[in-house]
Image (tube, rainbow, N blue to C red; front, side, top):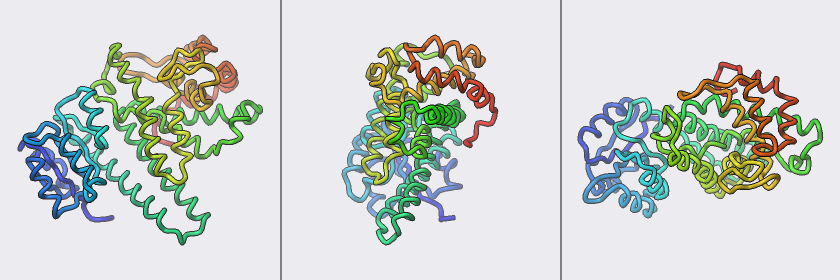
Length: 361
């Protein structure tokens, strides 16, 4: 195991710094700064692995500070997590657009703080491993392809784990929807359906990329994502943005990835799984077969699992009740051909839904 990593904590509150240090010092070296100006002085001689940056500081706030960090060649690649007392979506999206990788709302809980930092540091390690590997041109092509795939798969798995940790309900959901999509695709292959599309797919890449369909939820406020009740109309409009946010995140990763099938399919799943067959879905109101097949497949898997799952504001539906709702949505919400496939597989869907183990397969 490598030595402790270093965290630079920049917050003007002595209480916040003391609380964070108490939570983190067992696992990380902690550097402290009470102002952004002090942080930049520390960065002249130190290279932390991650920066925890308060937004509301004076005279320089966190937004200005991260702009400087990202504009400096030495510091632009240091991941930044915002610490914020604000829970409004506009502030959070502004921070993410400026280059923050995440935000943690104050006051924070120790387990969430540790898990967020651990996950992001793991992502950074895997990105560095992937970059190092890509620079090693002496490896054989077959070995290179396999190792790149393994590294990408690890990065993808870590990103999906971060989504699961943001929303505890999604842990089992991600694994189950992958299994549902797998069942549907196998049925299409066995019955020579939609082969004009499927013939070009690398199924190993595609099936694993289903895990990214909810990745945009990383950027949704905890106050909405973790709300133990139904969302208001305004809150639901914010929640709907997870489709476009996920697409944008994965498009950026895809640009820097030489073997990008994971992220190519992942961004399609993220962008289109809430489109509806009659054109009434979001974000683009696509209709019929203008909706990519990936999105039409995930629509069935996603809705079925949501219906079967218990939430703070509802009990889970029975298989019969969920099946009736899917059938009622034939040609309005769902591709009728895929509904026929679902009906042929409904007992297998029910078996997956009844599994109690939420761990990844």
